[in-house]
Image (tube, rainbow, N blue to C red; front, side, top):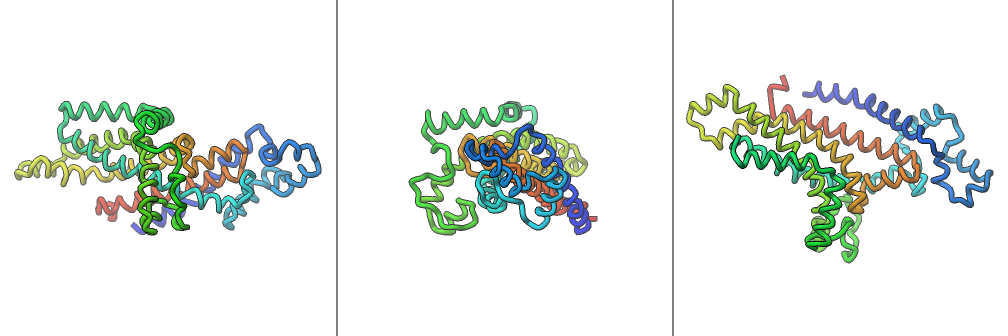
Length: 336
């Protein structure tokens, strides 16, 4: 296991380098001058001031020089300064990342629990009406665009039925939480703020349901297929010959045998949630990385876009590394 982790760690710098290189090329390929997103119309009329700002942000240098300067600064932990917020990008990202991670983890928990449960039921009652219904619902969930579902559920849940609050991360009528982890649900519990916890929980439910619904079908179908494949194995046949009950076979043997596929799909959908959260955060006014990325793209804030890409890429890489470690826990044979 240690060799596997070490091998994966040695490849991470190359992956990050490729990610930053591609993003740098794409952002610089836009046929717009970022100076228009930095300065006002009046400031743009002053050529001397424009030249000074270009020099300040290194925009007067050749692209190849800008590229290597960015790589060198990144290695030193300096992601630059945002054109839009005028704040260090690392500070912006540290403030925005907890909101996105909280939303993704909450969504993944909902989708994981429901997906595994529905997948087990569909496999246990293969060919039944329940199985057909679960597969149909899974297909619909995978086919509906996440932005359309977000708009519909926001309208129905907040306007028509009034079951959920509107956009935002916490009610404005709640006193602000003290500085903590940035995860509102955790901070509210630690600080004993039950009112803030209830508000944060109600606010996160609707966007989490949207994201969970978008991946629920994928998890359900894979768990069902993996369990049906496991049920045809010799050890399942032996268990049945020994008189082991159907539910015991399903939960203790078939489900455990399908854990590797389940871990794989959960790691995969985590990356999907990172991208899907961009649209959901924009619709629900969720102050996370997605909202920050959209506003940075509108302002042609190149350093901020590169910073968001770096954080998202590193997060996805770490999640897959954790998945590799969990493989060895789920199947000890991999350690050999």
